[in-house]
Image (cartoon, rainbow, N blue to C red):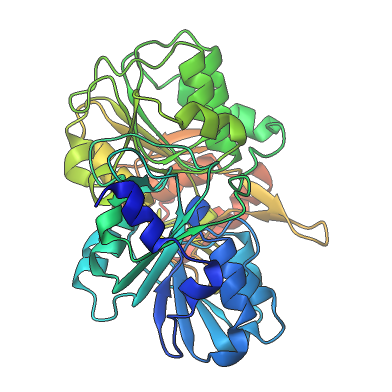
Length: 446
């Protein structure tokens, strides 16, 4: 039987495909841009037949039909590996919950899980001549999902970019149970955000000065990492490399400016390596069939042992807030979940193991609440319920608009002094007083 004949045999309607789902099932919706569309709508249409269906996925980039129904939360529960804005909104409806997990651990988790998905359904690129459906910019942990799912349903989308790589970039038709041809919606975009603020610019300028020629970059999501990317694209830096968890628009700008060659990478030389990508159509067009890019599973990209092999590794990430002990929260506002552990800690650790490597945690020194009140992101201690993403022993460089400090190896009083030095002047005395009460301030401090 040819692949084309097998394709025809397995091709069904979305309604037929989701008919295999039963009450009590655990099902998997893929990851980010490959979340199903037609299959999601078909499952929502038969929701009245179902109860207690657990759905796993992460960074949902558009509304899900199963939860747009008024009775959705009583029939489906969303279990997120990393939350985006839509998933946060579902929390208030009592149907969305975060699964605490280092992102790099997902492939092993699936393969050893006591509750593997009975059904996995997700969008893919059209089948190639060898019988493979490419995962698009979502290699991540998708092959591990397919390894353990009892039933695999793929939804073909002509707009899904084909992302090349080293391994685990697609699923073969022989492993697929049902094929659905959807409506080919545009791949969901993650906006690049507004223009950089003055604070973003000040933080980015300090970081770019620390990047040598030939460095290998990891950029997190957010305004500040994006601004760093823009400044790098305008800089005189050359022969940069990429080894990152998330591929973002900033890398496209740097590459098109001729700054990325990967010539100095110790592994995957000349390749831009990433676990998943989410951005604008410009980025998806750049990723499509681009042999310079290397799509790889997250237990490779985020493995500290791989990161450590690459000299001059530069890791740049955001945080929500931090305290005077150097504990970094990048996940929550108190008990309110914002995102997830992701791979920040993996890259903080890996960058420091790299010869010449540096990790930067950056943030604005303050934020303004809805009532217009100014608050410091640097706190005496983290708020009750806040999550420690990076422990006090891990942070390397901290950067705000008021400066950059290297916190590695400092004693508690030195660390408190350094952190306060880059806080907003309006809050410095309050922080000093708090440090003194916590016995991490010396009378001889400046």
